[in-house]
Image (cartoon, rainbow, N blue to C red; front, side, top):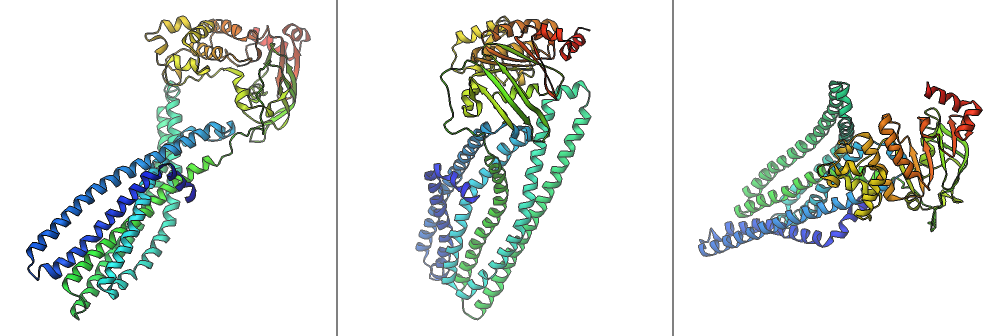
Length: 569
């Protein structure tokens, strides 16, 4: 874990080294003061050397000015290194999230992931900045103070440093308790963020059902759990802090008693004793830094551990020498395909069918039959348990995922618009498209006139998840996005089911234009939208129960005919 953490210093090594060199010089400045004080008290004041006294006080002042400048560099560069490391970590974790399979996002809350990326890494940044700096400064001051103290009085030095093992033992004992407490706190913060993200995303639903009080109660449960976890963490921190603080205070008493004893018997001078007391304070400063470092280390490393847990998740696997054919015609074959989600419940069993290139195949049937799952298997959002899916004769597991998905366009019932402008959402289908291509796509999707009627036209902000637009407008924006992508394979998953009849007819015209000359898979509950399909498959939890054209299935008078009569009724 430490090795992985320190690897993030490598790109910023130059700044980090400058930071440590300046920190080292600050420590040297701190060690000079007690030695000068010793010389002044033992020599210059008793000898009434006023000129030398003033000169060395001036030197001391100059040293403090240099120390101030060095501290500025340490504080500035240290934070710069920390924030750059945080940026690198966020880049790595976000890039890795883009490569994770759908199953990971099915099993993890968005708010919890956001907490790991934002909150946890903020604490990691503080550790990245202050950790090595505090540790390095502490060691320099500890060894420096020990050397100077030993040169003043060896036995008094041994008495002081004999307390260190007990201090280390106490700190190590409390460290474990702090680690558990801070890890629990991280988990509770994630739960709060996840609940908050969920509640804010559904704010319109909660208001529509007047369930604000229910949402407040749910939030308060998570909030109270956080308070309990944080209180426990602060309790562990308080035990650690007050215990170590008492040991350090007790150390001051020991120094006064032992130093007074040695002075009483003439084994140490007043100047040496004063210098020794100053060195004890210099010695206590790095000890306090080390204590602070341990607290910070626990907080930061618990965040880094949660960060690493995501990085260690296996990304979507590509076949060795994955193929990217020159073109895609769009001939799709399902051959004895079986699939089940992580819960083990079987969704598809031995499904076989073919969608010839350029043809339209519709999937109909009751909910839960696996129609949407079939749509998600073609672009390899999930991996098969058994069987093979081929595109133009190529097993999709041998194709590059990027190539496969680049040649598939999807229009779903739940349209997602990114926060941004209308233009940004449409051009998402082809980031290199010209404005002329964007305009052509919107005209083909039947949304151009609506956009031009907006105050800012293509630069109009859509609001979060496209809240400023109607369902039909959002659907046509998503269709324009697919027009711009211009894929040979098209998947329409309940693309019109959430629309009213008038809007559905308008969107259906756009979809008809989109489907032209493409291999199309349509999932629909409204059977009127699939009557013109080249083939209709009736899918249930038992598999494909009927297959044929609209007219053939009506004549068969089976499940499809019953569904049709139910719709017409």
